[in-house]
Amino acid sequence: MSKKNKKKKHRTRRQIFRRVFFLSMLIFTLMGFGLLYAYNLLDKIESAEIPTNDKELGIKEDVFEDKKIINILLFGVDEKNSQHTGRSDSIMIATLDKQHKKIKLTSIMRDTYLDIPGKGMDKINHAYSIGGPELAIKTINQNFDMNIREYATVDFFGLEKIIDTLGGLEVNVKPNEVSFINNGVRNMNKLDGKNGKLLQSSGNITLTGRQAVAYSRIRKTGNGDYERTERQRIVLEKIINKGLNAGITKYPALLDAMLPYVETSLSKSEILSYGTSVITSGIKTIDKFRIPADGYVEDARINGVSYVVPVELEDNVKILHTFIYDDKKPEDEKSGTMNSNNNKN
Image 1 (cartoon, rainbow, N blue to C red):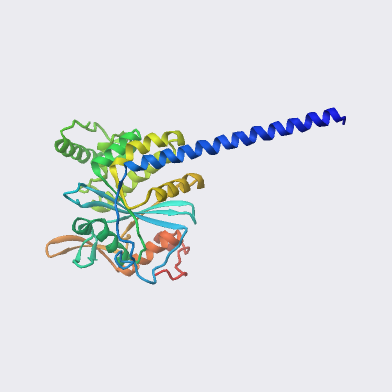
Image 2 (spheres, helix red, strand yellow; image 1 turned 90 degrees about the vertical axis):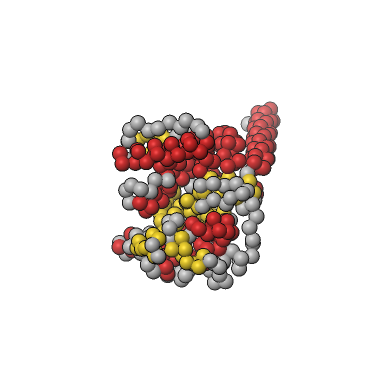
C-alpha cells in the first residue's frame, strides 16, 4: 500500500472515531438532560416521610432480606387529603425482582383479620385509616415477617386520571359486572359532579379511567372480595404494561400527568433508580398473587362482623415469602417444584 493510501486510511479512521466520539457525547448529554428533566418533574409528587427505624416499622431483627428484591407497599384509598387519611380499599405489595427479572403484585385482602400493633385484632385496612401508611406498613411487616420500608398511595380520582392519561385500559368485562361498574361510575359522578360514561355492553372494552376504577372496586358479584383483588391486580398490571410500552419519548408527558396524584416516601433518586432499572433490564413479566392464599383462608363472622381469616398465618407467611423470594406459588407444590430450603421465615 502506498504512503498516500495509508495516510488516507488513517484520516478516514480518525474521522470515524471523531464522529463516534461526538455522537456518543451527544447521546450522553441528551440522556443527562432527560434525567434532569425527569428529576425536576418529580417535584410534582407529594413526598412523605416515615420512620427509618426498624422497630418503628415493625421489621424484626432476623427478617430475611435480598438486595436484588425490592418491596414497596401500594395503597389505593377512597379519599386522600390533609384532613382525612382515608381507608385503604386496595393494599398491594409491589416487588421489583431483579433476580428473576419480574415485577410481582401481591394483593392483601382488605378484610384480613390481623393484629394491628397497639390496636388489637381487626381488619387490615383499618390500620391505614387509624395510623396512616406508617401503621399499615408496621402491621404488614410484623404479621408477614417483611422488611418493607417504602410506600406509594393514590386515591381513586387520581387513579382515574392516570388511566385516562394512558388512553384507557382494555378489560374483558363479564356480563354480571356491567351494572356494578355503572353504579360505581354514577357514585363517582355524584361526588364530583361530572358526567362519566356508562357501559352499554360486556366483552373486551377499553374502559375510561372512571369505568376502570369502578371495575376495580366491585365486590358484590362473583366471588366477592377475592375476585375484587383479582380485578385490582388486572388493572394495575395493565397500567404497568401500558406505561412500559408507551415509549421513552412519552414518559415525560405521562409523568407530568400522573405524579401530582401520587404520595410516596420514596426519594426522587430512588424513583429514578427503580424506574431506570425496570427500563434498562428489559423486565416485561408481571406475576400476580393474593394473600391469604387459596386453601389457607376461611371466611368468618366475629361479633357480627365479616372477616377473612388466615389459616394458619404462619403458612401464609411462608407462601408469601416463597412467592416473592423463591419465585414459586402454592400450585407449584402440587407439581413438586415448590420449596423453602433457604429458611426465610
